[in-house]
Structure formats: C-alpha cells, structure tokens
Length: 235
Length: 255
Image: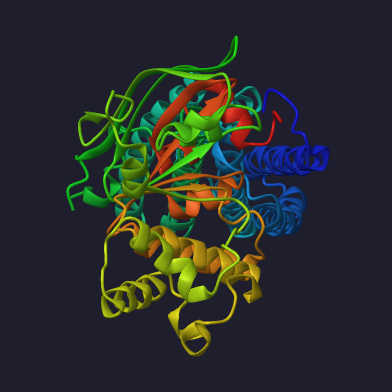
C-alpha cells in the first residue's frame, strides 16, 4: 500500500478496485441523503432517482467481483495485498446491500407521500438516518486513510442507531393501537426504520473489515448491541 | 503428532566467506516431521544456511561457520563428527536433478551399499524398491530399472534423486529449490511427495516460489541480506507478516 509493486500493472489493478469502492461509497451516501430528503419533502421524483441510481451500484459491485477474481487468479496477492482484495470484495457486498435498503425506502415513499404524517416520527427517522450517514462518511474516510481508530469509532456508534430504532418501533406500535387508520403508514415507517437500522449494521461490518485490513485481525471484543425491537411489545 | 519436538536447533550461527559475513546470528528451530520453507531474495543466505545443516559448506574454500547447530541435541560441527555419517542422516536434493550416470537401480542402491546398510542382493533389492515406491516413481520405472537414470524425464529424475536420498534412511531431507527446473505437473507431483514424506522425515526446503512455500510447508523462515528476519507458521507469514521487509518481499515490492 505504501510503496509500489515491482509489477506496476498490479498497482493499477489495486487502484482500480479503490476507485470503484470510492464511487460506490459516494453513490450510496447520495442515495441515503436523497431518500431521506424525498421522504420528508414527499418528493417522488427524487425517490425514483434513488431507485434508478441503484442499478449503477449493482453494476459496480459486479465489476468488483470480476476484478477481485481476476486479481486473485492472476496476481496471487499475499499479506496486506490479499487482505486489501478480500476487504474490497466484502465492502462492495455491504455497500450494495446499503444501496438496496435505500432503494427499498424509496419505493415506500410513493405510498407514504399520500399519507398523513405520524406524530413526530419523521424527526426520529431523520435523526437516525443522519447518524447512519455520518457513519458511512467516516467509514469511507477510514478506508481512504487506513485509519483503524476511526473505523473502530464507527463500529461503536451503531449502538445509538439501534436505540433509536427500538424506541421508534415502540412509538409506531403505540400509534397503530391508538388509530387503526394509521397502520399502513406506520407499517411502512417501521420498514423504513428497520432498513436504516440494517444499513447501520452493514456500515459496522465495513468498519470491522477495515480494522482487519489494517491490523490483520478482526475486532475481538463484543460490540454493544441495542436493537431490542425483537423483544418489544406494547400493551 | 508431536509438533513440539525440534529436530534441529540453530543457535547464533554466523557464516563467513573469507571476510564477507554471509549469515548473521541465525537462530531457528526446525520441527520434526514437518516441512520448513526458507524464502528470501537471491543472495539472502538461505541456500548457505541450508548447506550448513549437513556441512556441505565444509568443502567451500574460505567458508567458516560459527555458532551451534544441534541435530537431536548434538552439535554437528563438534570435533569427531563423522561428516559422511552426518550426511546419511541429513540428505539433500538439489535444484537440478543430478542422477549418477548409472542405471536407475544403481542410483538408488549406491548409498545403501557404501553406507553398509545392506549386504545381500535381496536386501538391496528391497531398499531400492521401497525407496522408489516412497518417491512415487516405482510404478513408472518398475520394468526398466536397468535403464540409465538420465533417460528419465526431468520430474522423474528429481523423484529418482529423492529416492536416492531416502535410500540411506535419513532423518532430515534438505531440498534446494527442488522444483525450479520442473514443469507445473512435475512440480505438483514433487509437492505431493513432499507432503507424504513429511509424515516420516523432517524436511527443510529452499524455494523461490512463495506459492510453493505456502502450499507445502507448515513453517516458513524469511531471510534477507544474511539475516533471519521473520519465522513462524506459514499461514501467519503469508497472511499477516510482522516485519515490513517480509511484507514487502512476499507482496512483490522488493527484489
């Protein structure tokens, strides 16, 4: 990483992998930002744009799959090069999933745009999305600078995302019990919340792979997990 | 399998060619019945080190070895050590297959005869057959044991040399780039053979192919400019080496 390979075309392959990851990262960052704006402003044109952008994310993932396989077969990378190639493959899979979740949120906007707002749940969703967006930005920075501390910090921030999701879950259940007419909107919002929570998990996974890339070991300590929605009921 | 037994212990070994120091303070344990790979750029001292292990350097003018090399706890450089006997315990296979200009049979029978391991024709026959079998060559040469060793293909010649090394019942087999003159199929045969042999012999191999080191050895030692930079489990060395020089070498950043 720090110095050049004797075979220079190997460096070109590795740079190309980095460039694709950067493009994918930029795209999913934008997808998430756009989908949240579209959700709040009920902008279905923007929502459609998020759905359309996902095709490019998928294409880039295929390109990563193809290029990593080629590099493994033709270059037989070792040590940090091997880790770099494996981590790129894992990152691409995680970024692609993040794109899918953003797209899934976008699809729900067409229905949510027709519905009344549900209390101040939009605010909580936005706060959660804001946290996840910052996590994505930091994890991409951590990858670009090979900053293990930054990656570890991202990993620990997922706790807060889980907390907001759990509380939103409880809140939405309460709204549904109070007024059955809100069930459609609340159910879609539940999925929105769950999707953002899952995006947080994928960002965390990327952070762990960056830790592995730099140190050669996956983080060993248990990460605090605070998604309690599976054990939540409202009487 | 007792992976803790160290067949060879190397302590503070320096090697000089005249005034030039070729190896500097080498300390290495070579585990019994495992494959240890020595890797490093040309001129790093790995072959020099290999040749210390059965005193092949004795015949090199101006070569001087300091420090201790213990085989089963006994110093092989001590006074009174019978070098011929040592070399029957620590055999060697070279880079280029070098069969004697004799028949296949005589190539294998020569060692046991001069070391007095067999007296009767039957005993020698048994050793030859057994050695060729262990070297994975018997089925290919069974009906032409009288043909010259040099009539075989390169890969077969190398297996013949391995059979020749095995015939004197060594404990350790040294291999100096045993596959560098062979095609990929013959290389795969030798690698498979090395894996099988490691059940009974301690093997130390110099190789320039890192993939080969990764494929066949359990331990790897990286040499650089006469220094033993890093040693450890092969898997560790190739996935997360600790030293920057090892890292640079195995990822193709220094020559």
